[in-house]
Length: 256
Ligand code: PGA
Image (tube, rainbow, N blue to C red; front, side, top):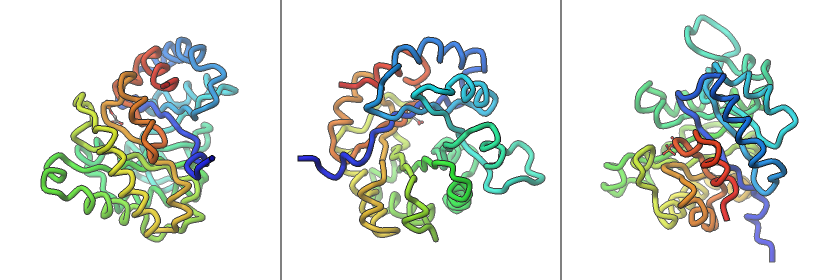
């Protein structure tokens, strides 16, 4: 029997962080695209730096791989040095954006109030947002994981309706697992995903919660992707380090 989670097509996302020049990005695609040609089971997306994004989008035209930006401002234009707007992303064909990544929160003072503004802007422009949430190690050790995830989502989703959030993707990224090599166990991840889904039902509607894809991120590798994807509420992965090499990332996309 098909369960309702089969409505949620899995999505495997590569987050390249501050790696790869345009030349290196295109060399990756030359190696990667043949490895995933015809792969339909999962959606595939890459998030290069802003300097590579236009080249990557052009190179991906007609392929089964999408690309998005790692961040954006919420306004269309203005005196905001160093920022990129949603209209600018749209103008180069970019229809996905990562919001609230923990590295933005930890190193550049990103807040969930701002994530909320950016999320509204993404929705208004028809850009698919991937919103990151996740707790610090100390918060987990203090038994605050549920409270932290709920607060993050509540703020990010403030004044956003279920129909507006229809294309929203959430990434659960426990900060203690990012770039550390220590992945959350599938059980820990599934428990956090259930908390997030419950909160989405409260913020919006149970139907939205049921339909929203929730990705796991934090030291995902070819060796652990299958056990994570076997968990009922895990609908994909956000992959940092292991998305930088084409063969590695293709192995993750094609998990058993
Ligand atoms: P990682 O990063 O896979 O290198 O742990 C994940 C992320 O930051 O999105």
